[in-house]
Length: 338
Image (tube, rainbow, N blue to C red; front, side, top):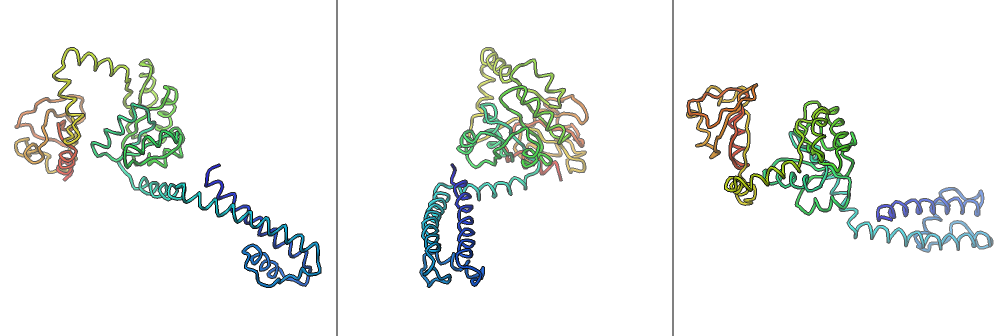
C-alpha cells in the first residue's frame, strides 16, 4: 500500500473513531448530556489531555468498559495516522503531488508545442533532439518505471497516462500543440492513436512510427502526415555509411556536437513580414543571423530552389531551408514574422 493510500485510510479511521466516541458517550451518558458534551468528551479522550470527565462514568461499568476500549482504539488510530503522515512526507509523496500540480500548470501554459507519446528508443531519441534544439514539448507515457527514465534525462514535462485516452491528450494541450509523435509499442496502438488524435485536432501534424513497413499506407489513411519505419531508416543509414562515409560523418558531427547544435532547419516567411519583396542580397539573412541558406521551398508548391541566387525575391509563405543553431532559427523567426 502506498503512503498516500495509508494517509487516506488513517483519515477515514480517525473520522470513524471520532464518530464512534461521540455516539458511544451519548448512549452511555444518557439524555442529560448534550451532543456537544459528548464531542468534548471524545476530544479530551483521544487527545489524552486528562481534563475532568464531562460524562460521569463513575457508576457506569459499561461506560468505563466502553471508554477503555475506545482509548485503546484511539491510541492505535493516532499511532497509525502519525506513521502514515511521516511516511507520506519522508517518501516524497507530498513533494510528488505538489510537483505534479506545478507541472500541470506549466503544461497548460504551452502553445505551439510538441507531444511525444511513448518512451521507447525511438521516442527517447525524439525527446533528446527536442531538448537540444530547445523546442517546447510534453511526454505521455503510461509506465511509471519508464517515467523515471525520462526524468533522468533532465527537466522534462510529462504526463503518466494512456496516450490513446482523449482526456490525457487534452491534458497535454493537444488543441494548442503544433505536432505529435506517436511511438507506441505496436502498429495497432499507433493506428488507434492516429485516429484519436486526428479526430480531436484536424490541423495538428502527426508523425507516427511503423514497425511493419506495410502499415505505412494505413497510417497515412488514418490521418498521419508522415509514417516512419526505423528499420527502413536504419537500412538506408547502413548503405550511406558504405557508399558516402564522408557525407555521413559530416551529418553525424552536426547531430552529436553538444556545444554547437547545428541542424537543417526551416523557417516560413509570414505575410506582412519586412522580408517580403526583398531580394536575398537586401534581406542579408546570412549576415544578420549566421544561418546558411541552402534552399527555398516555394509557397503553395512542392518545388525547391537549391542554392538560390542573391537576386531571388522573397515572397510570403516561402519556406527557407537552412543550416543553423536554435538561436539562429529564433532570430530568423523574428525577422520572418516582423
